[in-house]
Image (tube, rainbow, N blue to C red; front, side, top):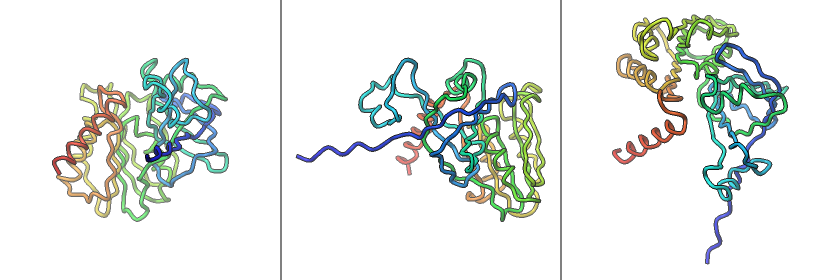
Length: 275
């Protein structure tokens, strides 16, 4: 009789809260010490954060292999995906920005209550995008969920690199300042200033934008609805090469991450079956 397959090691990485900062009314910055984080060189690098269920004690270090084998599924930690705003390899400071809407959700309330010494477990990073120095100009488009990646990309642009940045936020109080030495034109769109649907301003701005001559590298991330609409403009209307565009629906209006990930998985399954 064959021996059972050995359990995969799923030990997570450990980070400890160093400090927090409310950078806008609805954005909380959490700076952690993460000795095990390995920078992969992208500016959209993301981590999978694990939030334990209240009252449940987990193995230390957190091993998701053990958890899945020995705990009922309702006690498994909740996983949420967040983009890394920055990482300092010398100090091991890992900075993550959380959108906060009161008691809504899991990660936002955790960030609001976080204090120095709190432990956060994570997996990753993943990611694939970084500004290409060979591009003649850059287009970066997104909402609040994409701000960490957009900020990281802008600040990594080489001196003189040209970029057009289009960002939708709630209102003027949610605007952020970026560092860096590129020639960056940032335009903010405020949802409270119009009756337009989420992302309409971004879609209209991209459709109306007169693209400069030369090679463009585009980054469009955020709510899945407007990302899909801009995708059509970039690929079908403008004919941009697929390898020059980074697209990702981080979330979908009306769904939490679990529901959105399940929807994406089902869509991918159907596409495989019809291929």
